[in-house]
Image 1 (cartoon, rainbow, N blue to C red):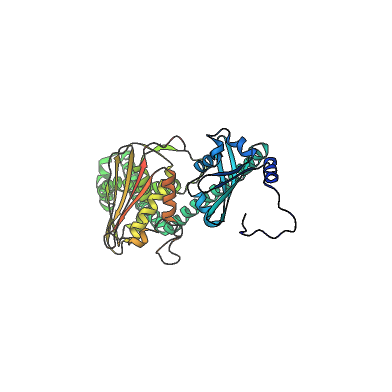
Image 2 (cartoon, helix red, strand yellow; image 1 turned 120 degrees about the vertical axis):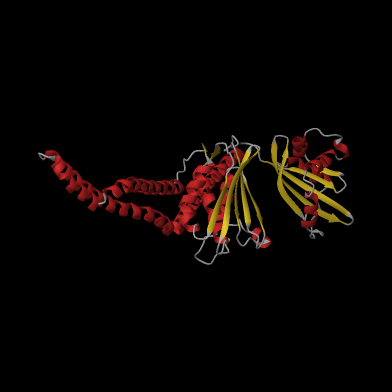
Length: 409
């Protein structure tokens, strides 16, 4: 019913009775009505699909359909000539086409219905569901690879700093071991002198020699310096162990990583340990930690969010500035806030800051995925990120997380 003038025909047109008879034989539902709801034709399939309606003789089927259709359907059909979609009728789902045709001052609509229930529909639905599951698995796998790739890119960016953080304690442990070797040689010399005195007929005769050895090798200084030297060496080894452990925890990737109850402060400190060399030359770090309960989360993923926030805060500070890390509890949620005294973010950039691949850094200095991935991780945790920033006034990112995850995760 798209042509306003039917083509000429040499034969006679079918009678109304013939059209009605053909409509009754159709397997599709057919309902014709006017814009005011007056019914022109409703075939047997329509009567079967819609069942009993109020006063079918007065356009009950048409008015029933107009109540079922979304409000915009008839206007779309009038504007475009037709509309297609699905329509729930009871427990059935009908493929529905609505056509419009104007004739003078009258508007006519023709609705066609196809019942998609039955075995064929079930098979098609199962096929589509299988395709969706496969597509979801591929997308999920791609997302995990992207997450791990960005994580390793962050570690690569920090590699020199991490190496420096490791080399520094290793350097003074190595130096201390050299001193310890000299101290041991001196101590063994004194011990040998004492052993000779013990074996001598008159041990007191060797006291001047022992005193001379003690003075030459400054044994009194060694006895004072040796505990401090050992404590420094132990502290250096523990520092290296902590950095390696933090690095391992941060770079950890396991698809089977389960949700667990963790201390958010521990994750924050691990992340700060990894990136501190990147910040310490221009940043004063302040901590304002509240008392937090154990949080149900994926700790490795949250650590990446912390790293992105801290690195961005550090990069926003040109010369010298302060980063303040704060935590607290608000009802059944906790929050972690990263505030910096950097350059701030304009309103235009705030609209795009979480878009994938968007970055204001020079080419080669960033992937533009850090904040986008952080946003996805926090969304996965059923949380949110709030941003408060203005040019020249610094930025404040607040991460809000539920203490316990919904049972659907």
